[in-house]
Image (cartoon, rainbow, N blue to C red; front, top):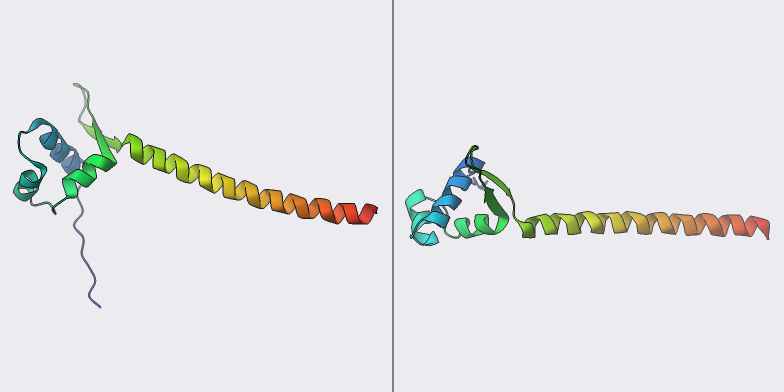
Length: 102
């Protein structure tokens, strides 16, 4: 089976491409062709990242609000699972100790 080689892009490249998309009059598809990016990639990056820039520093990528919310939901779901497991353990402990007293 042939192994797939995926191209990776640096965060600086992604940030510059997103800045071009934001400030340019060109469409995402046209910019993707000019930059040699896979079709649809710019729109995926735009959904996943937001470019944060100040006048004094280099623009940097951060997770978009949607991506940050997704990560928080995953964290909370993991915490709920752990608490449910702990509750089940405590129920078993209580039942064991209540049988000894009876």
